[in-house]
Length: 185
Image 1 (cartoon, rainbow, N blue to C red):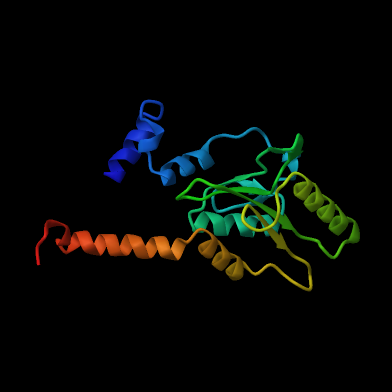
Image 2: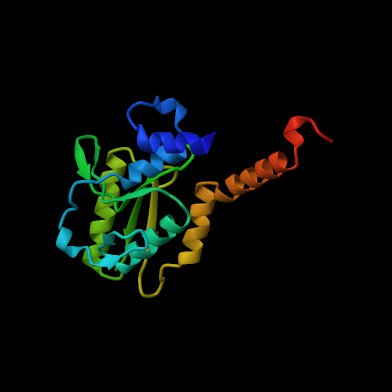
């Protein structure tokens, strides 16, 4: 049933009531839609596994984990909060709920001017009502504390309950493959 809805959605996007389309399909389509050009597009030099480009190796590593784990994202999507315009590094959509989480990747934290700018950006987010925790994620990197891709992957899996979803899918597949749904013993 879900596969049929997904196919129909791809072909008849505007005809199917959105409540019938699985959130996972809607968020995947959201991530694929063309966006307006990024700010300072010429600085996008690091390729990602998804086929787009980002500004830094840190952002490329983050994008690759998100892509590998199936988390739909947009890079530098404009966000307006309290009449202020922000460009968070990543806007993530929960594949199940569609709820957004914003992710800022702060590298070069050993440089004082850069670190001060990061703290000012966090202050602006807080002033607009977006705090680290549920909807804002922060990743920091410096020469003394490098980015750990596997720790980040574990956070992503925990945040979006990927292990729980995979376990549910396996149980559902096992249930239906053994004829349990027909009442057979």
